[in-house]
Structures are given as structure tokens and as C-alpha cells.
Length: 73
Image (cartoon, rainbow, N blue to C red):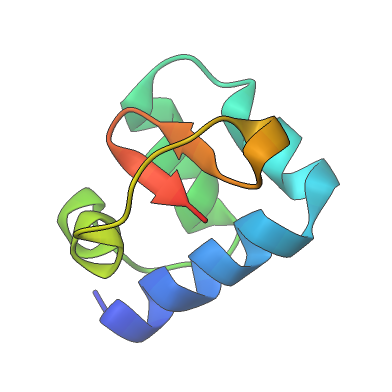
């Protein structure tokens, strides 16, 4: 598990619309995390939250991507 992997995931979520939409289309968090892992990212929910700690969540149109306590600004 790695903070570097969490950062890489966040960067991809920000820049790869197809990947982001695929992840957001999955309703269950366990399934989302499994798909993230299958895509080659080895990080935990806690590591993703740690990277995003202190960031404000907004909507997609405002340039932020939020999903169940994850913000990708």
C-alpha cells in the first residue's frame, strides 16, 4: 500500500475521463476498490483520504470529483 499509488490514482482520476467514469459507475465501495486494484493501483481508502485531507469537495462541474469522502480536485 502506498501514498505514491494513491497520488497516481488521483492524478489518473483527474485526467482520464473514461477511467473516472468507469470507477464512478460502480456503486459499491468494495467493488470500486477492487477495480482500482485491478487497474494496477495498490492503495487503501485511508491513503486516498490522507492525500485529500483538508481539500474541499465540490461538484464535477467545478473541477472537483467527489465520491464517498474522496475528493479529486
